[in-house]
Image (cartoon, one colour):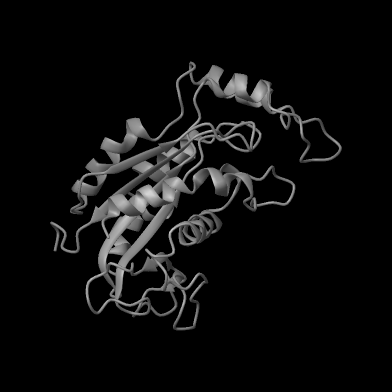
Length: 263
C-alpha cells in the first residue's frame, strides 16, 4: 500500500470522526481540534477499518504497550527507559509477503498534530510554528518524529503525517452563526469564542493560520538535518461544523527514506 492511499483513507474519515470524538477535557466542545493526537489517530484508523475492512482486516485496534499485539503506541526496540512510542504501525492486506502486524510491519508512522488557535479562539500560532519549523528536540518538532521513525526496526517503510486544523478568516462568520459559540467551559464565566477569534485575526492582519506556507520550510529543516523524503502528499477537508473555531483539517504526509544523507 502506498502512502497516498493511506492519506486518502484517513482523509475520508475526518468528517465522521469530527462529529463524535472525545476532547482532551470533558468541558471542551468535541471536535478534532479539541481532541488529542493519539485519540484522533485511533479514531481515524478505526473508521478506516469499518469502511474498508478488506484493506486492513488483520490490524489490532489497541495500544500495544508491553504486549505483542496492537497497532498503536508501539515501543521503540532497544531504547530502554524511553517513553517514546510509535504512533501507528501496520501491514495492509496488500503488503509484501512476510509482513505481519507484529514485528514485521509494512508501515511505521509518526503523527504530529498542531493547533493554530485554542478551543476559545485564542492564538496558538507561535507554538504551532515551533512544532513545524524548530530544529530543537526540546520543542517537540516534526523533525524529531522524522528522525526517530526511520530508526524503528519493525518497519519496512516509514512516514510522518501532519494533522493541522487550519483556521481561515472566514471562520469568524462561521463562529458568529454557530449554535455552540457561547457554550461555557468555565461555568461561572461567559465564554464568547467570537471575541477571542476576532482578536486573533486582528493581531494576524486577517491572514489565514494554516500549515501550507510553512511546508517548504519543514522540508528545508529535514534536508538540513540529512533526512531524505519523498514528495509531500496533501489532503484538505473543509466544512466541518462540530466546533465554532474549527472547520478545516489539512493532512500532510511524507514518506521518510531509511537511509539519510547523514548516514
